[in-house]
Image (cartoon, rainbow, N blue to C red; front, side, top):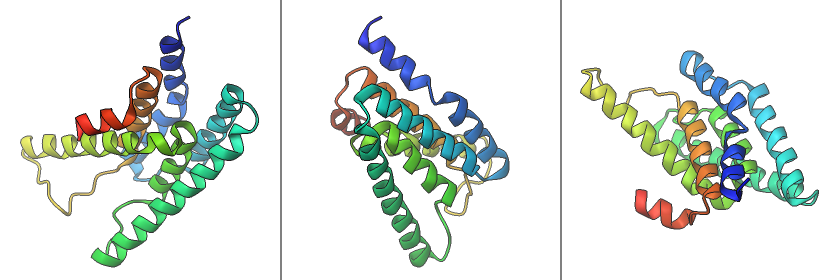
Length: 168
């Protein structure tokens, strides 16, 4: 099996966790902690299997850093606007996804998630539904898509910086 094909299969491995996380977030506006923990645990196991036992602590450290970064961003946004823009489940999902992508893959994940969310808002507007600053949109499904895009970019051997620059 080619490296690209096995990488693409690996990109689909978290799907049994990301699909329900996205669907539950769409319906209930919450990403269950159990799914985020499952994503984190499976990602740590894959990191250890793929890169050796020393990779899991590094992946966990990167996840903690991503959590702190996005939790801080969430707090700054709340302070500046008086409302919560990024749910805590989204922050936890980003941290768990960072175990899979590493910090280097995080920009592609966030870019893909943000662009797909913007496309959804545009589709709502085109369908005649009001869409504006106050439009509440669960971000979990878009984060899940972003994770799989980030993993696919890595699996195909594409330069994440170049992909992010071309998209953005």
